[in-house]
Length: 85
Image 1 (cartoon, rainbow, N blue to C red):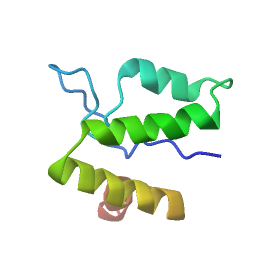
Image 2: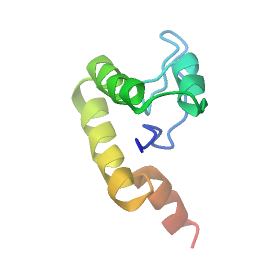
Image 3: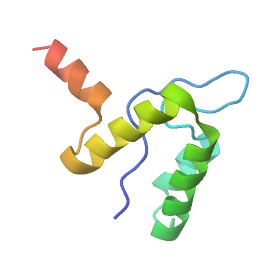
Image 4: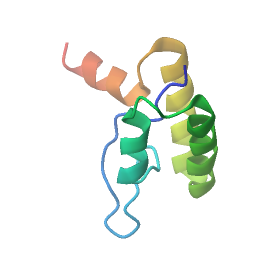
């Protein structure tokens, strides 16, 4: 199973139409949710979205996505939960 690249920073850039957090388009987000979407497509999409990013955005995505794949929660979501305690 491939973990969704959503890192809980769900804001869309009005110019590019891409999410600031994960770099996906709305169409890509929909494809991720479809049952028929293959792991092969998902892996390729993660590679593609990382090519769209650079600098701090790419580093932040990688750090949060790695945390999510290991612990089941993005760093941003973890911070929000900890702040609400």
